[in-house]
Length: 219
Image (cartoon, rainbow, N blue to C red):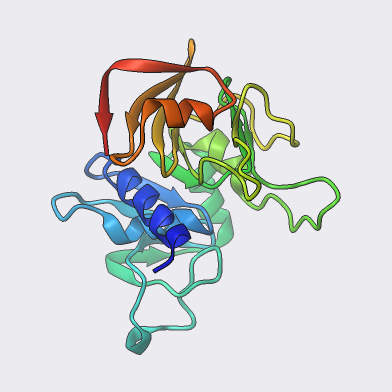
């Protein structure tokens, strides 16, 4: 397992601990889908997929793949006992009706005001923002799962987003391989750091101003 995959797993494991028992959670495509693999055994969480499921389970093994059961990113998934299937109109009624407790999405940029840019880079092919705009507006809590810096080592948590916004002021929590950051009215609060990093390293790799919580924890 390479370093990138280890980072993704660390992020997914931390986010999996955040959900309250009985929550309905939407997982965006890419890294967020890993979260379903790490839900604590003492919690019951139902996962929603915008292509028409509630009750997504962990990734199937090679011998139990059903090509007709895939998540919004087209990857095979399992369905837990009691899971259900429905059409897109019902799926987006659930999203837009405010029935999701959490949504977990990836991001290109997030800033101090909780603004999110996650669907396009000017000059590059854009497949579309999908349901992200609906999800961030409809879910009660928006959690961003992303690496702390981009491929060039530049911060992705900025003072102000430079890319076109998907949503304005909707992000509640940012989780990276280095940090757990909460978005508040006063700005970004660094509540936890990874066990193998330091506050100084997190600040060095963050353009936005961070307020360090007095009871800083590690994960």
